[in-house]
Length: 190
Image 1 (tube, rainbow, N blue to C red):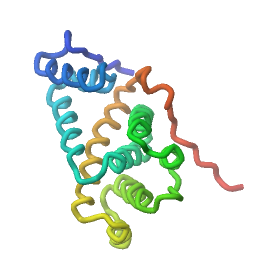
Image 2 (image 1 turned 30 degrees about the vertical axis):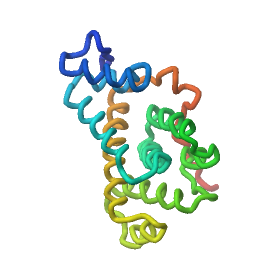
Image 3 (image 1 turned 90 degrees about the vertical axis):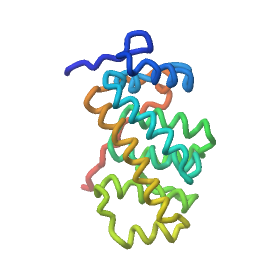
Image 4 (image 1 turned 60 degrees about the horizontal axis):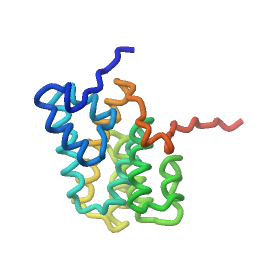
């Protein structure tokens, strides 16, 4: 493995220092993934900017976390699933719904969030080639065409961090270790 350097606001490239200071002010520390993104100031800026933009969508904070979690689960990101699990619980996502998302199974008690989880998963899994009937089911669940584009924005954001984790093998920060996760292994029927 080729180790990726994790920077902080003191040793990062000059163009990344302000971004890392802002990240530290927001979270109280610099998460390892952000510390690695700082090696490329444009990457850190792109990630933090897109994160801010996604936070301004019409999706509720809980719905935003469903998109980020579903994307990270589908991409098998051992870093982002614990991070967003922690955030989701902190903003009030029901623990049973969180477990369903983490396990890649249907959300039984909230059909709207299930439609969002399913649609997001399909966008990732099918690389945007979602069948018209699936798109219609998402819209019939009360979402809009603007929400379709907002889901794509969230998928784009998480794809960047999921792929960074995969290539950098980013270690999970202590703050997120209680929510550690690994992709379930599918059991074949005998």
